[in-house]
Image 1 (cartoon, rainbow, N blue to C red):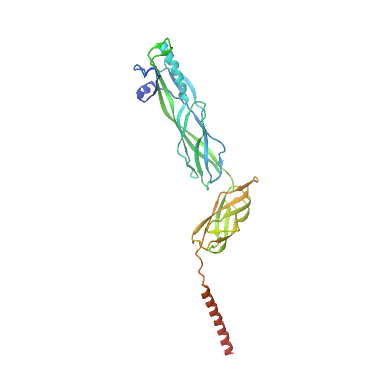
Image 2 (cartoon, rainbow, N blue to C red):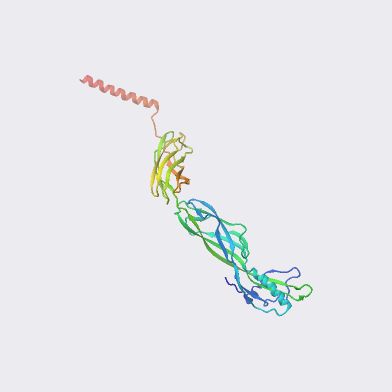
Amino acid sequence: MIKKGSIAAIATVFMMLLATVPVEAAISENFDLDDNYYTVYGGPQIEASVIGDNEYSRGDTVTLNFGLVNKGVISGFESEKDADTAVDTVLQQSEMKYETQAVTAVGILATLESDNPYIKVKSGPQQAGTLEQGKQGASPTKFTIEISKKTPAGTYPLNLNLSYKYQNNVQVSGDEYDTSTGLVTNQGVGIWYENSTENQTVFVQVKNEPYFEVTNVTGNLYPDEGGMLEVTYKNVGEEPANDATVRVSASDPFSTTDDQAYLGNLKPGESAVAVFDMDVDETATPKPYSLNSEVLYEDTEGHDQISDSVKINTEVLPAEKKLPGYQLGTGITFIALAALFVVFRKRKQD
């Protein structure tokens, strides 16, 4: 990046300069904006990288740690004025020291954005401090992202925007050279800062792995009755799941002594049915319910894994109406008497 100070522009925006003045005196009234000894070329260049592993599972909410390094360089100086006097020599040397700070990025503000609906950035802009040339941030710049459970495996770009101020030009001035101290009296310094932005692309990887969804649930469940719940699990991921077993977590109003079912080996796209013997509390309210389950399996490298929670959506139906005991007894008696009457009448006719 090449930055060339403009003396005319500096004169125009003089009231906007951030001035730092030696304690000996305020800026002298003979501060001359035309005395610019150097124009410097170059500036900050911030490089960002993800610290640690950038590969995650679908459904994860993770914190990304970014390391920032300032690799800016000064590519050259251009002399605007020769030093003809002792005052000029001192001021020229002073300006040179200040000009080397042109590669410092001041007050870095980092913003992370995602253009993909599968990945959401949950953090707002983050302050990243000031970085001198060749320096790395004292601590990582952190952003939290949320990866959708529906995210296909693959590589996803994120946009990291960095804004900061940099020193565009320096002006020094003074009155007289003090031979006893080697200093210039009433020396003043004017620093002109400008805004700059850098846009970088960083990447996160969503793993190839098994992923499970419930595609069908059958079974009638009633209050105070047990029932068989048949749940179809499908591997919608990219890798096979071997020796898979599903475990259901029964919570009120459900209970079970049969909370596991074997699914076997499931390649991508394959399904298997798990059957659970469920009990329902007699006080259960008829309505839809959701049960949690998880699949335990062996991955392609032979490591045991546990899936994210897989929801089973089911329903408790209204209790079936039953005849009270005395009504049931009366009915049976009536039927028996009717049968005897038919038999007696038939014999009489014979």
